[in-house]
Length: 478
Image (cartoon, rainbow, N blue to C red):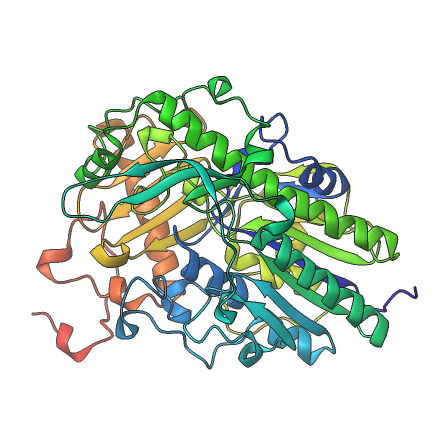
C-alpha cells in the first residue's frame, strides 16, 4: 500500500483509566499498550483539565479550557444553561479535514449535547447515539445500597465473550473505516476510537476477570488516609463506601483492571491491522484517557471532587516510528489542551488559532524536562457546583477550593498526597507563589467568573488576582 504524504492519525481514547495501569511494571496486563510504549513516548506528567468526561473530551478536541469551550460539566449532569458547547470553536477534526484528511469517530462521544460528530468535521461516525445494545449476563456483582437512593451496581462479572462487547464492536467499526479510507483514496485519514471501558460500573468479561487474583491487590499507600487535613466534602464522599470490605475493593480492582485489559485486546487488533496493511509506519498513534479513577486511593473510588493525582494524571502515549524516538519516557509537563496542537504540528498541519494549549513538540525533540512549565485544571463540581482550580509547577500542586480550605502538596516528597501543606507556615510563600500561578492562568485564559473575585465574600485565596481593572460595571469599588 502506498504511503501518504502526510501521516495518518489514530486516537485511541479510553475512559477513566489510571496512569498507573500503563506505566512500566504495572500489574495491569496491557501488552499491546506496552507495544505502543516501546514504539513511542510515554508522557509521565500529563494531566487532564477536568475530573469528568465531557469537559475533558471537549478540551482535547478544541485545545481550550472548559470555561472557553462552554462544556464545564457533563452533558447529562446539568441543564443546558449551565453547560453548553460554543459551536464557533474550532476542533482538531475540522482542522484536519481542511488539510484533506478523511475523518471518522467511533465509540463514546460525550463531547457536547448533539452527539453528532458529523457537525464537527467528521466524515463518518458510530456513537452511543445509535441506540446500540450490548446485553451482559452478570454472574456476580456488588451493589451499593443507601436509604432513599436507587441501588447501583459498582462492579460485576459477565459471561459474554470479548467479541460480544461494545469495545470490540467500536474497534471493528474503526478498523473498517480505516480499511475503506486507505483503499478509496490516497488522502490521509484520522480516526478516533473511543471506549467506555474501564469507566464504572466496573463490569468485566469473565475470561479477562479470571486473569486477576483479587488477593494479589495491595492497599494503595493512601488507602487509610483519614482525610482530616482535606476538605470536609472528601470525607462525606468516603461514607458512600463505608460498608465495603477490603475484599470488596480487591474485587473492584480486579474488574477495573480486567476492563483495562479488555481495551488492550482491542488496541492489539488495530495495531495488527495497521501492520498487516503496511500503514503502521506512517501512522501517528495517540493512546490516552480523558481522566483517571481513584481506585482505592484515600479509600475512594470513581472520580469527582476529590482532586487527587489518580484522577488528574492521565495515560498518554504517542508513537510514530517515522519521526519520534522509541521507548522514551518524557517528563515534560503537559495538559490535555496541548495534545491537539502538538499532533497538528507533528503532522505538518496549520495550528488552531486562539486556543489555550500549545504544541510541546519543540520540548519533546530537544529533550527538555521543562520543570518550570505550568499545567492547569478547573472543576465545577458537577451537580454540587463546587469550584476548584488546580495548578502544577516544579513538583508542587495547589488546589484552590471555593467551598473549603485549599490544598498544597509537594509531589516530589509526597506523591500520594497524604500531607496537605496549606496551613503549614513554612510553606506560606509557596502557597502564595502557586496561587499567583493560578491567577496568571485565569487572566491569560480570561476565566472571568473567577478573575473578578474582588467582592468581600470571595477573598480567601492565599493572594488575590492583583488586577486593578474590573471587567464588569457592577464590580465598581470605592
